[in-house]
Length: 295
Image (cartoon, rainbow, N blue to C red; front, side):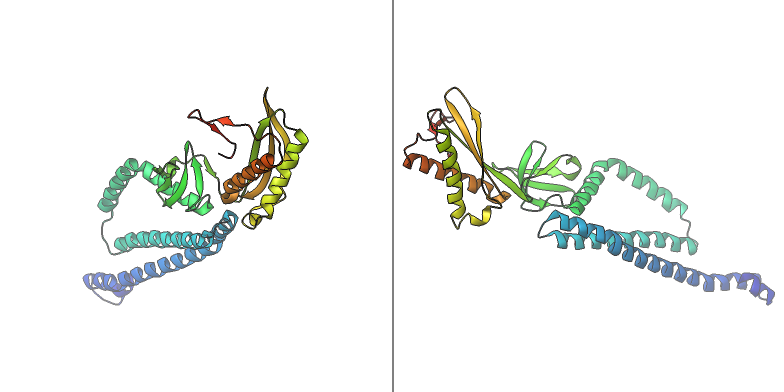
């Protein structure tokens, strides 16, 4: 443009001004158009490819909130991409307009390095929280075990997970510190009922009572849907000089496991008393009193 104007006989100063007035807006507009195109293509890529992977992970998580979480994470990634594109385009536009970027970039580098060095753990927490949310390892309401801490998830964010311990205490676990995680309510579990009885008890009778008691609980409408398969009588699993222990197990949802165990113990104890067999051996409690197997 400058050379063309000079060839047409325009003065050097006028040609420079015309070039600045005409070319800079065109250059800025071109940068904006390229940025918008990059943001659009990146958004399509994130929603199609990364969003698909997130949705598949959400389906494997088997959580009622999984689909909503997948949509939220995909939207968040798309927003992050647009912010990055806008940030880069902003500095390019400043350069096109003739603004010296060296002092700005130097100051931003120093500030960024200082913040990054002092906030390493925070960045790690955010990245770990994002990955935990993408993989759907736990959800609000799940009972999880993190290290030596067990509790119900009351809240989760990108930085911290809040747990409610069985004693009522609240634990705040930074997501970056989660290395080994156990989810005790995902899927199914095995309700295990061990009944210790005196050695004078007839073994066959004990095992028969275990099986009939489990089937009786299974017939109860309150517990029918908790049985994912037929009860399994294992037989004797332990023996001492004065007692032996029989076991029956049932595959059940995690949240129904403990109520199911209590119901089966109660039924076994009731049947052993009614049928005249020696009742389950009483075990010393921590306070020195005697307790039955069902508490």
